[in-house]
Image (tube, rainbow, N blue to C red; front, side):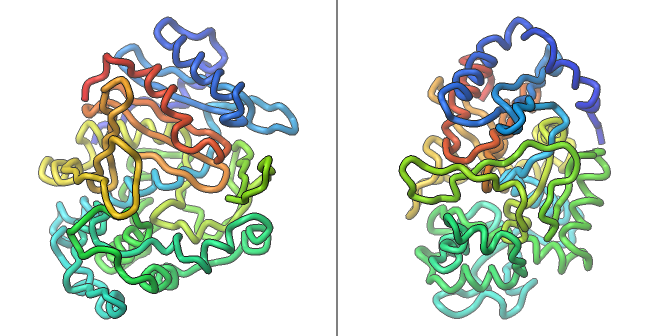
Length: 378
């Protein structure tokens, strides 16, 4: 397994003048922060010229502290690439098959209300064509995370099976394999299958198979731990409230058991560079499983997703307005938007985080276009 140089060696780059070739990226970041798209933005880029770190805005609006390369943050659904990689490694070892059904591994868990675990495969969980509803869209669950209710429930603990049942309480909007339907419930089920196949916890599999071999020193699954370990930006959120103008709250501390294998990991820009660089270059999976991961489906479905995207197994492609296609994953949680996207061969990769959640993924449009332009390979 090839491991690239640690991001810590490039930490001082953030304090240096912007090197030629990244001035447009820095300007795009500055504009996004100045226009209120985010309190602060941190970006790391690696390409043929080496590594570069840049930032705009602040980590803490109270103190004015600037963004730093070593900061840890919640990466949201970028977690799904980690989960899918573990599943595919197990498939490569013959411990499970992508065409195995949920029923084979989790008998009786997915049944009733229009669901039949005998007709849904692991592959369909990973590419979101299972037809299983997203537990996050359940009205009773969702309202606990909006506005003042979030403060009452920020330390609640959820068991994975509990949230799977929440997702299954809504009848399937489509049949398995019929259409793309983005659902965190899929990745909870995938992680429960990982646990059955390995005999350990999902967190243990993540550590043993990805975090430790790649020396991702800033990456971990917090479980029910509410604080972020080590240096980190404050995470600012509007808490999905409809206030006009929206009120911004500090949502840094919370129990993310509600996200787990679908969106619960904490990481850094450097660690994401290492993981996605190795993943895109084909160093984490054998060729057969690599091909499976990057075989995509159309994301058009009963619920609109990100335009101009196609989804594989834990990764997606995104064709930018410039016409360039980038690969990787991105995600959000309270107070954080994260992206890890680059060329298909992994030789040009941008990882970044915005420590505010009101701008949505489009905050990265200008940043990605400025970096990749019309030169990146699709």
